[in-house]
Image (cartoon, rainbow, N blue to C red):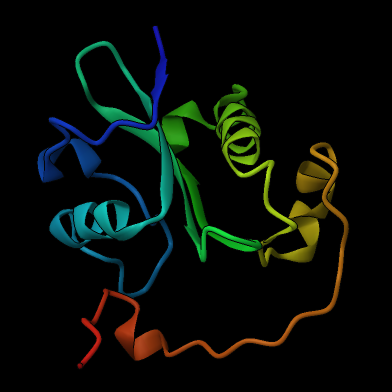
Length: 138
């Protein structure tokens, strides 16, 4: 049975293994936990034993805007509605904001369109050598 929660209490790095499939320089499970803890909003999909099988994060100013940088579902759980449920729950959490943005590959546009999102043009920088999660310098 899959349980959805926005609580991080009790989540340990060892429950976050198997994500970031195909990334050449993925974050460690410990860094993944730091990502979740540093997010303005999180929704997790978990098995009854506590294993995290999917997650979605948002960063936000808490006033007008939010950005959804990550949606991941473990490969064994993909195409079973987990990702859609995570998006639905996150958009509900962010519903009072003026804008909610994300960047996705073109083949993912139909998935996000199901939730009322529309394609748009974007600009971005990717520092792939820092993909594992470098800390910001103060």
